[in-house]
Length: 269
Image (tube, rainbow, N blue to C red):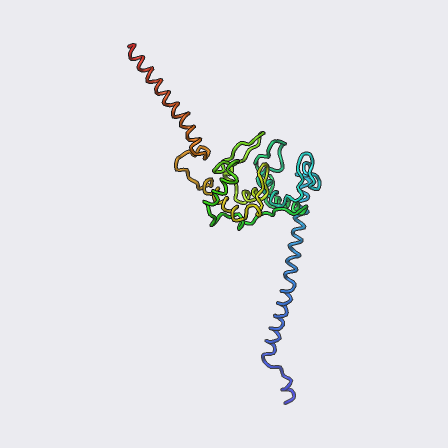
């Protein structure tokens, strides 16, 4: 009996074995889970590139070449990055409806998922600016006054002081920034679409881009109010003075003519 009692397991032995088994399982999961996740992400990226290549072949290759090398009808896309695709296709500028001085903004024909797939394929052709995250372009907490200084220094020459847009040479124009999403404004500064110069992070840091976006949201956003009524293009005394001369002085002349006519008629009678 003593011998049998010696062979009996301690009451806590089963609990210890169970804990060791759970620890071993957790260790194996920790060792292999990251690799599985990375492999899944890589597979998803490959699928996105494949789908993007199909979309590119149908909607883009006729102008930009079968491999993004460009042609007489369109520039090469190697190295433009995913951000350029997200901006151009996400604002409807691409695919181009017809050749002209500039690609205008129009109705978007692709879904966001398809745009992401196109962007993934173009990004695979060469390194370039990536699509920014919301943290990068969100104007929350940015210095609006500093953004105004930066905008007037770098952008107002073409886009007007409040982003109303303006005419350029040979049929080109700087589009209005009213209603443009912060993401697309950030991407435009990154990539320099159309006639706009690019402002990479080496030239204009992320913080300054956010400040410009905050300024535009303050002066040209959905909640912006104009205390003086009609803002007349945001040109200040130039447009307001012209309005005064044309309509104000014109009204005074009309009143003077009416008074003179009434006076002359009264004298005759």
